Structures are given as C-alpha cells and as structure tokens.
Image (cartoon, rainbow, N blue to C red; front, side, top):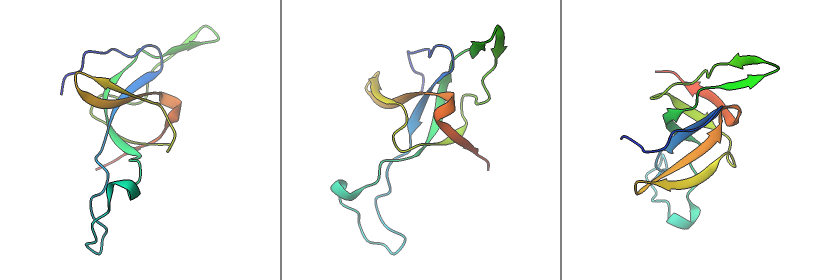
Length: 97
C-alpha cells in the first residue's frame, strides 16, 4: 500500500494489524470487547532527529512489523486507510520472523 504522507524527523507511520476476531478456543469476540491492536507494519519513516548537533538515524524501516504501546501515536486516515503516526521511541520492538 502506497501512502501519500511523509513523516518528519523521528516519526513513523504504522498500519495497525486487525484486531482478533476469535479467541484461541474459537469464541467470536464482539466489536465492543476487542482489544486495540498493538502490532502493525511500518509504512513510512522520517529521516531521523538531530540531538546535541548529532544526527540520529532511524532504527526501523518500511516493512518492519513492530510492537507499540497501547496508547502510542495518533490515529489518522490517509487515502481512506486508518493508520497511526508515532515517534520511533513509542515503538517497543521489532518482531522477527
């Protein structure tokens, strides 16, 4: 999916994964009880930030699957898709494999 937004500095655009529809036991979860997803795919990254005169490059890249805090970032709609924009520091880790 191509997006028409370029994040600035240390910001990242993330597409959240869909919330779980069923439990591991097969029960269907109603919309009102679904947990907000805390995992998503990085769609775009900023250029990094400058701190004390030194440029700090971004450690995540487009296509990475990341975990982020429950209340991290700001939800926005870009080209009809719900995405989140957050600081790289709001990302807790990169999922491998």
